[in-house]
Amino acid sequence: MSTHEPRRPIWRILLALAPALTAAPAGGAAELRIGMAVSPTTLDPHFHADAANFALQRHLFEALLQWSHDGRLLPMLAHQWTPLAGGAGWELRMDPAARFADGTPVRAEDAAASLHRAMTIPDSPGRYTPFLVGLRRVEVAAPDVLRLYTDGPAPLLPNGLTTILVVPARIAATAAPAAFNAGGAVMGSGPFRLRAYRRGEGALLERDEGWWQAARRPAPEWKRVSLRVLPQDSARLGALLAGELDLIENLPPRDAQGVAGTPGLRLVRQPGTRVMYVVLNHRPELRPGEANPLADPRVRRALSLALDRAALAAQVMDGEAAPTAQIMPPGRASADPALRPAPADRAGARRLLEEAGWGRGLRLGLSGTTDRFTNDEQLLQALAQMWRQAGIEVSVEASPAVSFFPRYGAGRFSMALFGWLTGPGEPNSFLTALLASRDPARGRGALNGTGYGNPRLDALIDTALATPGAGPRNALWRQAARLALDEDVALLPLFHQATVWAMRAGITYDARVDSLTLALDAHQAAAP
Image (cartoon, rainbow, N blue to C red; front, side):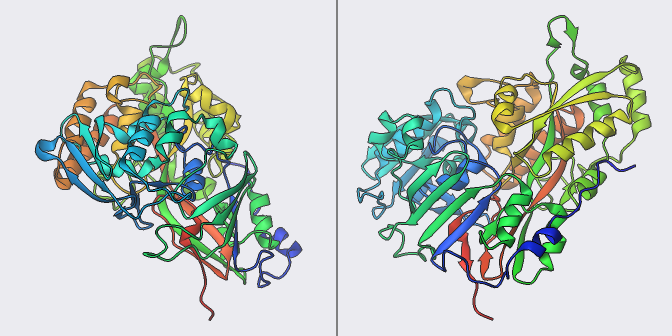
């Protein structure tokens, strides 16, 4: 039985209506027009840690350190980073050449003010604290020297510094998110300047001809970049085929094969960088006086056994995904090759439900978005159908991300579909944010609204975060994954999703391990 309704590829219809794809783009070679799948929620680089925000903001602002497109940690505003004696933290030396767009130097005080703002900004729907776990105190030791003091050794803190974008200290101290969204507070050191921004529609950027890094690395090839938000897959692909866009992200998996065979277009894939999973509410009661069946690990395991992850990857995601039982994709040093998804066993799921006392009348809700992840609505319906085949009645509540996020953050759900960019590095931010016991004072459990907690897992996380060697640390991450995902069934990993970009044949793109769409990684293709 099919897990979802048949979905016809749209590329054939759109292609018949499109002009010749070999025609020059309307904006000329100096302009790159990108179709974005998800709308950024803010221009404020410290207010909401979200992938769509990263993609926009990193054209304008820079961090102390950066990930290359292939996952190497590189200098950026800081050109040196060294551990302090005794594992007390890190010392970073600012690059003396670094300049904001107005020509003022980027100093240690700017980085310190940006770190403080990112950790303390009020009313954030998603803080940056999971990336800065262990950071206790920031010191400006000299105009070009920043010292970060930690609660013991913190070998992974440099990885987290790639997420904190730096603004001038005067702006960090006074500007509210609204000032960034209006454009007046946007002052970064990145390769582009902001010319226009409208939430829900996109942004227009212009190359900064005085960009401080231009003498060291190739400047952006594009004088102008337009980022156009088109959440509907058909609209995004249609705009590419019609010659209105040069590059689009999140090509619908069902259209990938057809577009790959279309003259004048090319595809670029980055496998497995986003993990999709179902979050489970572990609280004793979902509503006052009503026992929560998900508090019983047998019910959680039954939910997992009822899922055919291979069918989800092959049918709902049209083969652009790989089934998984863990967070990190295969091939990563921290991934556990022994942790594999079990085959669907709905009879086994029914037996577990009977044993737990929920063999009859189990009803649960499944929440998720309609506009945040590839095929998210279809995936919600497929999950519900699989659970119904195991005797579990599931009602689906799908809503736009703008209304889903507040309910998710407040823990107002029984089950919720969500995704996480694994990106380069290790699973520390995922584990500390989503599975560690909630402890705001220590930066643990910032996104854990489920009530789940296990002291053994917390101890493994603490030990791993303080372990300097990558080999021993990865062994600890594998132990943590087995405990949380196999033994506790704290949440249900589904699959690792590929990111697919489509573009005109005159464009090439360096696929990024973090799946972000950045104009610096797009290039004009060499003539054949």
